Image (tube, rainbow over all chains, first blue to last red; front, side, top):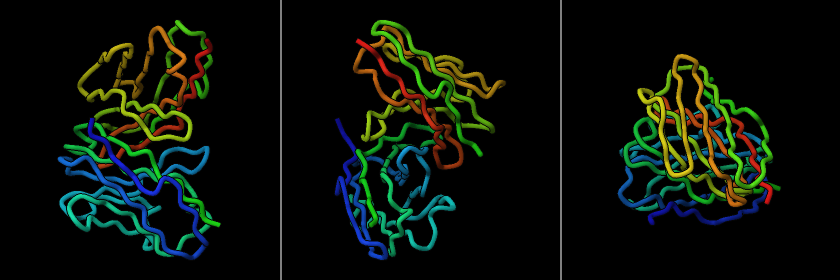
Length: 115
Length: 109
């Protein structure tokens, strides 16, 4: 069964460092998303991406965050200068028709720890 | 906020019993989706119900949607130990999903 894969599963980084979280969405999906879940809290929307551009982003997704689909298969989330409060589980998701019409499939997540 | 809110926060049941959890939300939706999350792992999609649907079944899962009350329920019948997980409702609107805080279900053998 097709699945969304994320790497790495766990990343530890120093505060102020840049991190790139990687995702391979399901191959025929067109809509891509990043969500995050701080320990013990709700899953929060960060950004949606379609047709090589951002469709929508949340208030969390400030200038420190960026997304890219560099080669037609990978979808990345970059955090330029990490803060302690960026520590969370980051989930990538993809959908065939967008979540307003179809389900999203989530990866297993990358646990980011900023020290 | 669009976010769904689940009730109860936690539920402990005996294997074989049914588990029911509820979700309330605040504004218009395109659809409502239920997800399961095993401890520390990814979100698994369970079922999607569109705003013009009232009830949907998938295996041992039954979901209802009442748009007039802005609420949904998820029923898991004949629960198993493997159903132990957190369950989240997510409202879909405007290119994103908005998740509730979840219901933690523990199924005792």
